[in-house]
Length: 56
Figure (cartoon, rainbow, N blue to C red):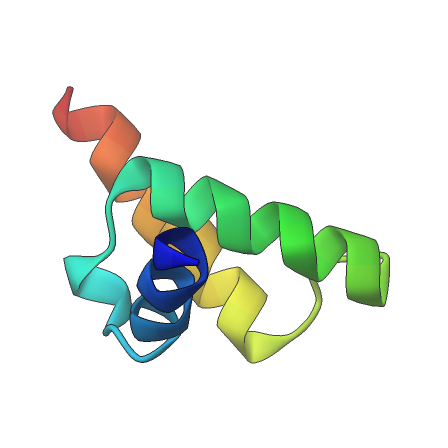
């Protein structure tokens, strides 16, 4: 049950505070539910992922 509480709190985090693994998990969930990454939230996550992967 502790894992579900952690996921619930991560939904309320700002995108800039998410870790790379949290971003990837959210992108996978969006891909499963919507089938694409056209939503504004998904595009913002992809942009943040690009920034984090460039940094190291």
